[in-house]
Length: 172
Image 1: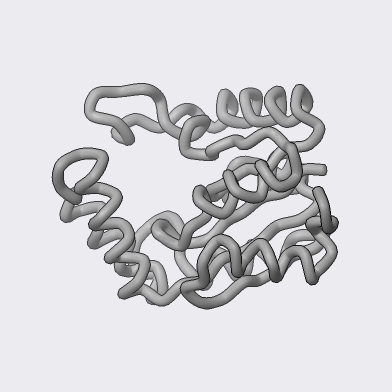
Image 2: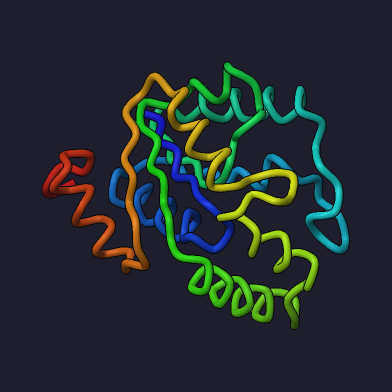
């Protein structure tokens, strides 16, 4: 089974994705690791879309049970439709931005103002890339099951909802 956990930057996709992969004894794949080339400083050069597709599909083929965290919008139909389940996280902007400030300070010493500005516009959709409207339209186009989780919940609360939903079997 291939599961995608997606949402705005700071919504908790990586945190939930890694925890879900552990619960399911599945591989964990961070979409950003495939999207961005390794650069110093990081996150400055995108990998060409064809290479992204090839790398992600090869990884998913190698790991028949995997949880992917992040966004794969505009990666092409083969990747975008490769999931059995998509979990969409929505958390209000103030919570997302505080999480991003803390994460960026921990990883890089300070948050990049341009990145925070881009992340802050997600709900309004005024910048290129991810936005709430684009994500919702993308989710509507999916043929697989979509689970929407809304609100700033803990990982354990998210996992309990997924257990109640039947995605995680008790004792797994």
